Amino acid sequence: MLASVKDILSKAKRENYAVGAFNVSNMEMAQGVVMAAVERRSPLVVQITENAMKYAGAKELLELAKAVITERSENIPVGLNLDHGKTFDMVRRAVELGFNAVMIDGSRLSFLENINLTKRVVDFAHKSNISVQGELGIVPYLGEIDVTEIDWSKLMTDPQKTKEFTEKTGVDSLAVAIGNAHGFFRETEEADWERLKQINQLTNIPLVLHGASDWAKGKVLAAIQGGITCFNVDTDIRLAFMHELCRAANDKCSVTDPRKVLGPARDAVRKKVAEKINIFGSANKA
Ligand code: G3H
Ligand code: 13P
Ligand code: ZN
Image (cartoon, rainbow, N blue to C red; front, side, top):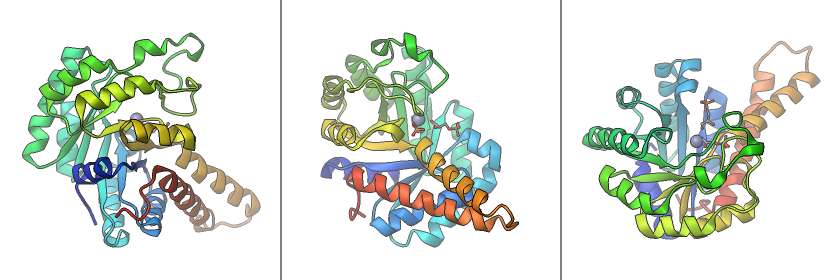
């Protein structure tokens, strides 16, 4: 059932586990993600980006995601979040489309501009009971920054600024930069656990870790210990989908029915998401 992201994350924070927020851009991915959550009896966040909406059509993809949640999630709580909204207009559109949570990513703006944009979004979204995730610090994308010259300390969230940011904006959750990056990116072996601990103490709201695809179990567990309540995963389920799609297509290249390759790809997503849910500790928490 469609459920509040704020409630999903608050429960995870209270009970010391994390939920997965998984990005989808087509029917099979949405179904695979929701099927895994039902199988593992786990709360879940389904996420959609602006690029995914450009690809599939905003209204079409949203209606599809909502239908998958209604038809398949049984009584498992599932939130529907706009991932990396960059502008106020994008957020307004997301609310009209029926997302029940949004992220406003002002991380590339100055601190003051980030506060102003995020606060404007919070004031607007809260009127419709929609929760808001902000971001402080930079979680780089593969290709955005030269990995060989990266100075991680310049990208990371400044714990002292998080208090001012969360108090002034009123965000419900916060994406943090502690050495994490989007995609299969060469990250520092250890994240900055001390920084995470300080951020957690100073904010006391659910913290979100983006770029979790390549985080192994040990790092994930340490992050939960440090206060992370939500892991964003995109690349790893794209890879699971594509790997199985290609495998099935090569084996059956004489078959002309797309369902023969899309079905196994959907199942690969289901399996990958179920594995992540086990590691995040959200199985049987629905
Ligand atoms: O952080 C978000 C994604 O991993 C990038 O997604 O390619 O749909 O913009 P996108
Ligand atoms: P990955 O693609 O590294 O899993 O990151 C996903 C993400 O942060 C989506 O917001
Ligand atoms: Zn992200």
